[in-house]
Length: 446
Image (tube, rainbow, N blue to C red; front, top):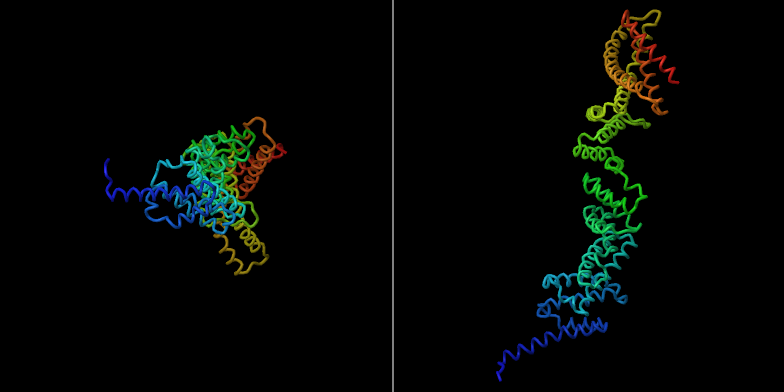
């Protein structure tokens, strides 16, 4: 028989003693005596104890069990984090997680999962959404491990954990992270009214990213699962306009859409309309933007481009005409007081030298403003005549179109009435004929 050296005998007993520490803790955990397992760990848990992955998994098991103990509720958070750190160490040392096949040791990560889940729900109920999200990220990670090792009875993913993680990520304005959890659920087409926000969140996310492919993909899934929900009928344009009430954000969203598809009539027109509504606001007390000229240039570019894309459509022409009418009216507000003042001075029976001097100073100023007024008014007239011609060639008009048609014709009659002043000869005859034409048409359209 081979003799054992003293060193070999000592090593054998050391290894046996070392393994005994693990067995003692496992035995205590197996019968639910967590406090006894903790005492053994405190007494024997040294560097050598933690030199093997089993040491860290046992520590995680002890602290995760303690975190669920209602008698130790005050220390639950600390114990939970201690268990998580120990489990992370275990995973580093044994990436295969083979020890989770052990009937006792697999309870450690399961208890940790339950502890984080319960604590996360409590945070939600208390509106502590930041801490709740941090917990549910760990719940998802743990659930994936438990499902892979057949400790949780799910075939794919923990749908509730992923749902909570996604909702909490979005609540904490982490939309990229929310999309990760939502996509896992959507790829499985998880049904149920409670999950509709998942599909809405994905549609909204990819709309704002201007990702047409994913937008259509998740909209189609949402429409399949929730056929009566109007949310899944919205277009990218709907989101660009409705995602925010902020003017700059709307413009930015629309410009992204147009950059991706420069010849989409609806998007180009919508951009022009957003600028138009700002520059020609009907709101009481609305103030002219300081960068009016810059915004006007962008508006005109968009509306003219829309007209080029669909010359048969009236809306761009109507908006352009109305914009120039509004500009001429604003100039008219400056012009009329000067006209009145000059008329007053001229109508005096005996104007003084001062009156004549003042009138002489006002007339060039009036002429300059009138020139600007005429320029804007002439452009408006051109667009309105084009619109009138388009209306006249249309078939049946609805009530709104009839109203628009009549307003435009009335504006043209007023324009030629204004132009009649100071006109002579053949020009006067031509203007009078046009004024009569539009007045007659206006009356006919009543």
